[in-house]
Each structure stands twice: as C-alpha cells, then as structure tokens.
Length: 162
Image (tube, rainbow, N blue to C red):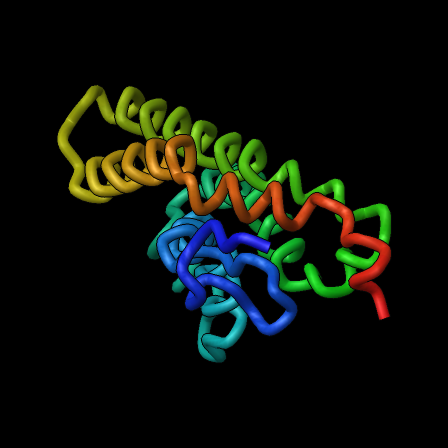
C-alpha cells in the first residue's frame, strides 16, 4: 500500500485524519452552537449573553440552521469508527458538499445583514465574510480533504478484516 500523505496524517486504523485547518473551519461554522451552549451555562441571565451576539432571535435561529450542516459533519467525524464497518460509510462523501453549503449560506446571510445595514462597515461582518471566503476556497481546493473523504468512503478489503 502506498501512502498518499505523510505518516503523521494517518490514525491508528490507517485512515486519513482530518486536517487541523478543516477542524478549525468546522469550529468556526458551529459558532452559533458555541454561543448557545455558553448562554445556557450563564446562570444569571442566559438571554443577555445570547442578545449580546444575536440582538434579534430571528438571526440566532437562522444562524443555527446555517450551522446545522457543519454540525452534521462534526457528528460524522466523531462517529467515523462506528460508520466504517457499515454501509453508512458512503455518507462520508457528503462531507465536502455539506461544509460548502454551510459556508455559502453563511456568506449569503452576512451579505444580507450588510445590505440591511445599508452597507455600513462592520468589523464582524467583514471578518466573517473574509474567513468564510478563505475557508470556502480551502475546502474546494484541499487535496487532503478529498483524499480523506475518498479513503473514508471506500470499502475495506476482505482480507484486511479480522
């Protein structure tokens, strides 16, 4: 078997591990869930912390919907060992489209927010659009991610199973 990447990118089972940049991308996309969890742990007034990041409840719920495909990818990565031994391993091919969908929806959401603010400059919107664009380009062009999803979706040879 020829290694496609350096040895440090493989786990104990011989499968390609996700790249750190991809994990940071998922962490960035799941930020509404992080804010929600942080607001639940804030004892005095959980709504105050939520209102700090999302002044309108509509934006919060919309952000949760945008982050949902990325959360599905996080769950797929978390349970990859259990999914490898089943036919469900074919869902690993959906990793890249789900992340790209979430990134594109996030870009559209923040452009619409800028439009509603009459294109007034906002550091939050500018930084989010910049990171979304960088991650979108990275996910589209990342060879490591393509090799990982292809490796995770393929069936193990029968003689390798114990």
